[in-house]
Length: 204
Image (tube, rainbow, N blue to C red; front, side, top):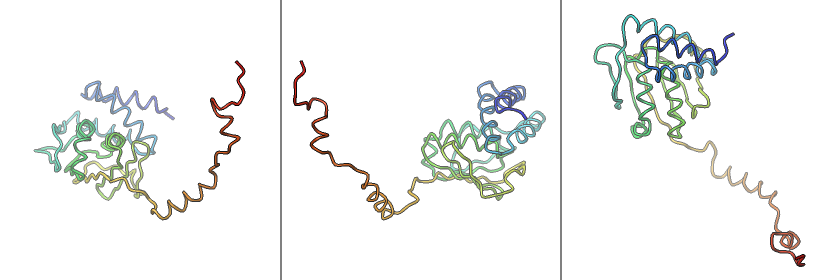
């Protein structure tokens, strides 16, 4: 079994050989390592994608808008992800973003996971009956048991920035906090006397 370090290094070098700059290739290496750590088929998706673009390069995206469509070809998930990550603070204001005709959309996920960490919000991504919840670059959750299935092209990708809300009510919080107060210890005169500068005798 290959180590995550080997996966990172090999994916980085393969991406460079396929035409990406060293800077982007390094990002790809980290991303594929993360996908594999979460049990998602990053290596398989990247291998297929790099084979594809060596024959027919995909369309790069220069600027991300609320609605993003390729002019002719399919959009590149790597360049979409890079542009998203670089501008995620501004893109957060859109709340909802859509992409159309994106090759191998799984390769976009790690970029969005890192963006989630930067903006401090969870990001929900949906495409081809797959739903992924990205949690601050810590976890990737899916409600689809077939998420390991290779999606060669996503006709539509929906991305939503989720607002941070508590999973509990204020009543529940107050009840729990009240219980926690039983551990509080009131300061006694004896403790006050032992505090810094509170000694009754002078040893100097």
